[in-house]
Amino acid sequence: MKAVLQFLVIVILFFGTWLLLSRINFTERWHTDRIGSYNEKKIGQLIWDAIKKSEKEIRNEKVTRPVQQVLERLKVETKESDSSDPISIHVILKGDANAFALPGRRVIIFSGLVKYCNSPDELAGVLAHEIAHIEKQHVKLKLIKEAGLAMLATLVGGSAGPEIILEMARLLSSRAYDRNLESEADEAALHYLVNAGIDPRPFANFLFRIAGQTDMPDGFEWVSTHPDSRDRAARFLSLAGKYDKKWTPSLDGTAWIEMKSYMEEL
Amino acid sequence: MISLTPFYYVPDDEEREKASFSYVMSLVALMAGMPIPIINLLATLFFFLGNRKSKPFVKWHCTQALLSQLSLLLMNSAAFWWTVSVFFYDEEITNRYMAYLITVFIFNLTEFIATIYTAVKVRKGIHVQWWFYGTLTNLLVRMS
Image (cartoon, rainbow over all chains, first blue to last red; front, top):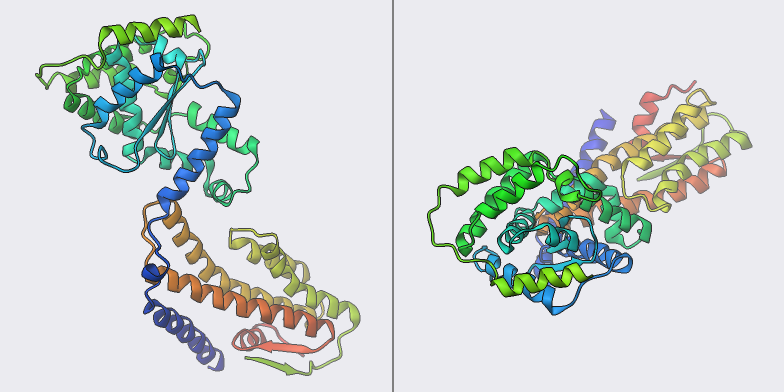
């Protein structure tokens, strides 16, 4: 009986303290906004810094301008288009055909993927797909799934070494999203492309083409991180078929050819 | 909240050391900066399991240390997962959340001070009984 009474006193003391403190307006006093996005950004910056140290970013205008133009076309129609936190795209000089989204609203494209694209609309499709992963919060989910919460806490706390950060970058660039998330990203990408007036069918062709790669070249990462491409392509094509619009190319032909030629020279 | 009473026999030096160490165990993980709240409990639990057949003085204090960690685990786990959802999901920071963190901090701090105080006293052979945990330990550990 004595123990029960003492337990009740402790419980009352705990909840009483909590209740009383809850009456203080901490959020207004300490200006606590949502910090989830802040941490995601911080982790994204750490990973991007690590990638920058180990890889070479292509900063030539022949590449950055067209890519930016495609991004602008797509962004115009996403709900975050007027966001103060824009998406940034970085092109990395690397032969692997890969593109992936990083935390903190960044998309990384390897030059190998740009070379593999037959048209700017295919590239726009890939970009739209990666942007969809960002907008739908998939990157955050993947980060938690791959890295684990303890690791993320270490990263946010700033005590992670460069090896850990590089490993995180490797995980994000080489592991696939769940099938459901891929489908969701495809649907969102289709929506972005259609709203931007970009023909979505080339992206379906791109998916069909990578699905047909029987002798996969080394480093053809986008395929391994985006499985079931044939099914996805078929589904994407069927969804795209519902739209009858006047499409405009995502880039003018000259800019695209110049970019491809520049890439070939590298 | 803490009472100092004589134990029914005078513990020898080895018993005092072991009994005192049961409290220190709960601080080790805290000192190491482990973010996962269960670590403290595990450290105390393993020490308890290793000493449950020890002499009464050691057994009694291992049990009190373990029980105190159990309740802290509940509070800290809630704080930990709530914080995780704030950091990694878009859960908003509310006054209730901040108040909870401060409350948990106050309880942890109180326990921290009590633990150090108890560890020092027990090392000297003084029997320290905590409010509620001491009473509960008396019910669980048979003293003859």
